[in-house]
Image 1 (spheres, helix red, strand yellow):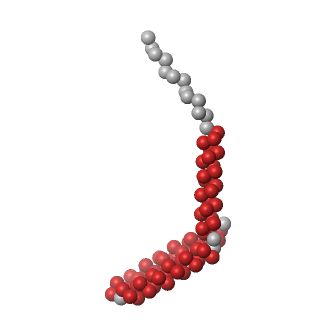
Image 2: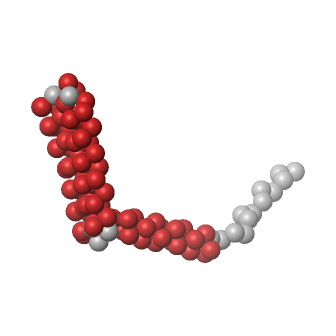
Image 3: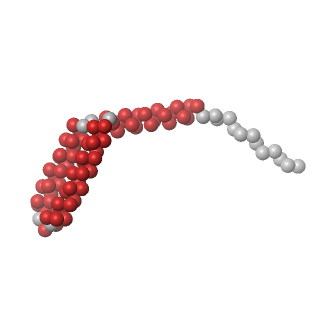
Length: 88
């Protein structure tokens, strides 16, 4: 799902841009403006990740990895190895 990857990268870029602008525009001195920009960023991130089906990509990846783990466990050889002989 390449769009999900693009969505995750865009989300990361959005928050890195916010961090850069926060340092440059000195949002520390204006806490209400900082809260407003963080809220807008969170809404934009949620819309972006939902629109690009990132949650389905994560769910699919978890389902595939869990099924591979179950198959691996099902095909493991469960017989014990040879017991060490007592040397006397």
